[in-house]
Length: 539
Image (cartoon, rainbow, N blue to C red; front, top):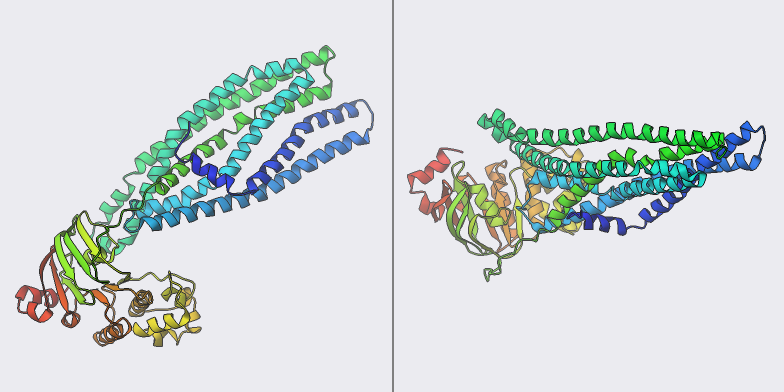
């Protein structure tokens, strides 16, 4: 039965010529394998007859060499095909996940599971399929070879064919659902685990580690049930196949024995008949590969689910001025409630509030990093974003600043100067070329590099989510002055808990319990005792 990911698997195979080389190599190796029992039989008969026929021995050696060499070539080709197929799928999936934007409809951990595990499984489809095709061809060729030896041997063997077909069909049917469930639940567990690791400090501070552990492990019974189902099906098929194979071999051996008694077959022919019987039942012995094929199809279905997800429609209405931001009745479940806000283009906006007021969520919504459950968000121009704890990516510290852009060394240097981190970087052993892994940074230095990474994009809107929290007040003031010089006329949204920062802002947004309690200048709001408590009470 066709599954959603089958078309994707076909595209993975046809995009590269190497599967055809693997198939050609398999054809040569299979042909040698089918001729080998006959050559061995002739050699046995020659030995029993007391003759020495060099051509017979040479033919046997050549077939053995071809099979050994073909197996070696097949291993190399299989590794190359799997690696290339996996890389192609991961690239397609990653590009589409980026196109879907943030937040994506797929949880982070689940997306990681699809990019890593599912792409790895689906990337091996050509190798798995070729192995099964070779097994089928070998089985069919063995039946023909038995018929050439003695048609009675072929008839005896074919009596087992319906039983073998029933075993294979039953295995495929019983395995499919369990394999898909196992893949889906594995992705769910990965998503929960990644969420927990990301919020480790919060979980520890809240003292809910036990509850969070229970939440992460909650899907495990379903995972165990699916895994047990696969193993039960596998075990059932293995013992059935284990009984079927010797039964067929005994039947063929008995028929060959009668052939020897009646003079139709030689001793070597009996040996060949046993070899062909084993080859013919090879498809039953490939039950594990059938499970792999089902897992591959299930993984491809999960990849196709992402690729078939259409990117979200961006709102067409845009503020006419680049850098203007506007929220209309925006709500985010558990964080923001009916927020109305207008940030004029070029304004310096400070977002303040007590802990849990929703400041970071509001910044994420303004910067386009978080979707809203209701309401409308309007923004124009590119957005640069800097975080409290930035993750530095890239091979060198310089490329970490320019990550995701085509910025040259001059632009990277200017961004570092604006972020007040240039003096730190030039003192490193290799300056801007120092590898990120070899760069010891304090929290404030890492924040300034994250800020430089946002500046180098030359955005119309710059969102700083507590991105200067680790800086002292003097350094923060210098960064603010440098930003004004480096990005003149740009809109800035800064999440802060410092009154000095709020005092420099053109507009202060005061959040309380996910709602905008008031907006205005810091001087205007300072007369409110509750507003002063936001700073004097601490976060």
